[in-house]
Image 1: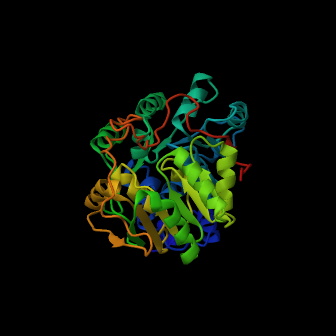
Image 2: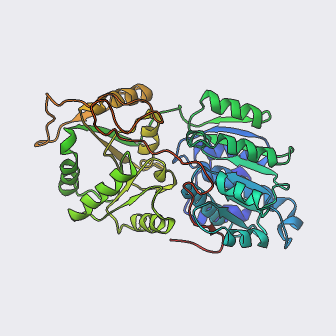
Length: 431
């Protein structure tokens, strides 16, 4: 199948061709026709499946092929609302809208917190067709009456599972309550927990279901390996891998913000150009680090789980789990950053004695045993003492009974300005 077989208007086919794409991915083949006919959609899609184009292309088609009088109005209210969990994803989605809609009279804006609201207000007043937003900042605009959601015709809830993980369920329900009852709804999630299914049941009307891959499985194009070592060997082992394997453009995952900063400094001092990206960094620093990483100016980008959700690089060759996540599903999301768009990738996990329970849970989830490798000079000690067991995410305390600090999984803060960066809208790019 080719994009020309999907019935998209010529302007969209031209934009797709200019990006070098000819064949739609499985989710695009299934989602685009359903969205174009106005049906509700419930889609299971991992990162790297092409889901963003899977909904932006048919939405642009629907806006531009009907109601052109509304598209050219000076004072227009948003017709499409895309709700995303993070600022990085909001930027990515809005960039996709502009990339594919470049030959159409469609405007878009992304709004999110962490910066002044006034430039966003000005952009909304100029009129916008497609609004991409994070929940907290959107509700800020609603409270200040600077956005009108009464004209929303299509509502997209992207990465719904991450939304719930970050505690946005109340905000989502509040936003849904502000939308017109007659509208098209599209829900995308990497996993479908009972909570997601409950949300979908109240949101979707006779939806088309699209499931492009078995849930909670890792991409077949990703080679997975575990290197067993002692906890105190990890930094030297990581530097050894860079030195001996000539690694480049490596996304390294750390469990905490503090750990990400410390690891980036260690690599940088060793001559491995690195930067950290996490929720406490300013949006300017995050955007700059990501741009330098994409351009190859950085060898390594050290990230926490939530910060990495907006990283979208088709040809990313390596992911290294410096520390395993406490939640098995996060492992799937992490390694899904590589092996995208049919490219091959490699995911390496440095696993010490006390992380073996997490590794066991991960292997149970992905239904396979990951190959173990021992690097000469970094053999794990048979007598290494494990740390005390860690309680589930969100229930951990800073100290255990042994008086030893426990790693803390990054969680989203509640409040209006939690984890949201500077404004980014059509007509201006922040790199």
